[in-house]
Image (cartoon, rainbow, N blue to C red):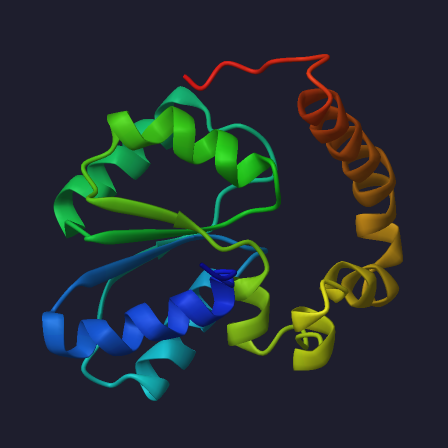
Length: 173
């Protein structure tokens, strides 16, 4: 077993879909990023089918926006809905909306939208393999990521330690 890196998974599945015919929908990113990503992927994988893109607001979707998204997904029938929101926002989005949207698979890939659209540079491979990509990204975007990393990461480590020591058990459902 090895690490599955979202940006690499995205490229592999887009390449695979040129033969399989799987349809893709890009949801997330800053204004215009999902559309730019779709254009770049179409250049890289010309036979790839892109069902659509949607850039959500930086807040929860209103009821009307959700209805529009559901209608768009239903009309375009993507096989894979790529979600490029920040963590943990994208995980919450997918957990809540997977049963409500007519899509086969949702995959959260976070910054892959920015990387593959050319908006941001990825960390060097050696940093990725060494588990230091977070540090590279923190240095690249300190204002945006510092609060998240210094709050969420220690909390995550404490929860893991509590679980490993038997002090806390988390339900699997």
